[in-house]
Image 1 (cartoon, helix red, strand yellow):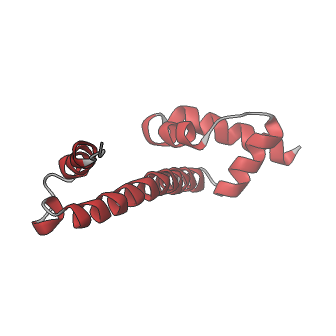
Image 2 (cartoon, one colour):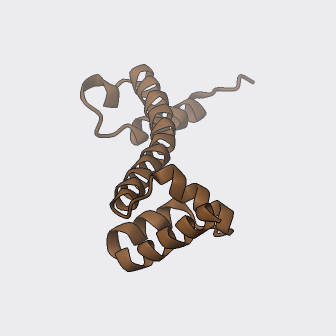
Length: 118
């Protein structure tokens, strides 16, 4: 008896075509092109998730640097001073304080200044 693979092949094709629904032109209709588009889109999505993290870190550092310079300290001096003082606060929270709560940020800057001058 001969084994046919049509059901499984159709399932596989439908899975790709369903996932690329909405792509422009033949990419949403032809299996071979749809498969290529799907693979490329997944690759770009993976890379994009990594770039997003990188971009946010750059944004946080920029915000911290601007706020620190307004207080008379450079970004790297602030981070170094906080490390010397034994304060472990991440850049996301520091940037949040710099934007939304300048008084608290000023306290961190003063702590960093004291730690550097010791």
